[in-house]
Length: 233
Image (spheres, rainbow, N blue to C red):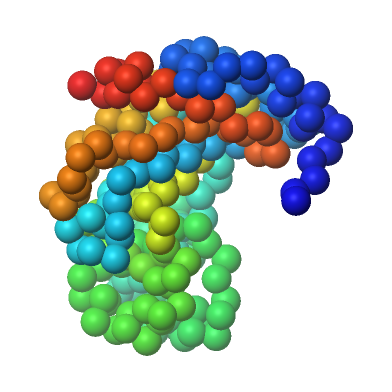
């Protein structure tokens, strides 16, 4: 059985109800953060999805209006001219064969990947390395593009990719506790709208099972589904 620390257990006592409305859930999540550092606010949405089926696989992007509060390190796989543009736009690193070789050796020190269509055919060599980490670029996610400058700028501003894991759960960090209630609430609504708009065609029955919000090392707080979903329509 998992053991919890004293601070966690003290904060857990404040969670007296399940299925709270959006605004109350966000407020309580911030109140129950047990850490001294600026913790990440996380959303965990349990979806009625079986990603083993192609028509039930959820992978999309969302631009959070207030960003994530995290400095995103972006790697860009592109020809020399485009690589230089990417670096000028704020990419952590950019290159072609040299960068592919670096990654093939297991050197991954970035959080997001952008690639030009011309380079994608070369990236098969590292697909099995990037894929399991959720870093393989995808046209659907907008990470395969000829406009690498725009892609990098959007990622720096708060655009992020999300997907359901093998259990059909979407895990997303939507900001920091220092953002305050209103900004976290705005980011949460944007995420839920995006998930709703990207509903896979193979979903049968209810799309969302449960939605919880928490902070790093804090207790989970269940959202009232009817209230949460009313905000995305």
